[in-house]
Length: 216
Image 1: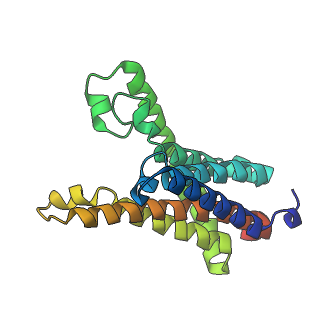
Image 2: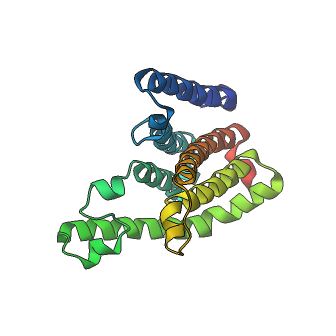
């Protein structure tokens, strides 16, 4: 795929068009805006789809050498896609990241599968630190837009995760907040997840557009 054939504006337009289309369908089929933020509806659904789109796109545009050295990047994106759709909980008795899965009476096959997933996550985390962070930092210093988009996505994900279950987290330290605040925080969390996934798609697009070779 030639750089000239891959326009960032096209990718952004397609993502926004899908968002507007699905929002329109949700608004037509449901009585309240609150349902748009429910599981399986526009915001959460597109967040997951865009993580997967970023993974597929990254594999498609990465140079062969980068596929060998940075294979963990699309794997991480696929794991984020699966997490967004709660597949870590749907396929096992307990969540893959829950200690109860390994210490409780869950089937041995589930424990082995869960341990394999955790091992994969740890390997990807190590490779991310050792192989991806150095060129990422250089990209930030060089002002590369793909690196800054990844930074935006990372900060957004961190903030969104801090808002996840904020009512429960604050209750644990004896601090109660109103139900309306909890609802708003939950909606902000979902919106931030969508922003993060869109930013990652755009990071892949911009990285391909600029040229991966300029990262070094």
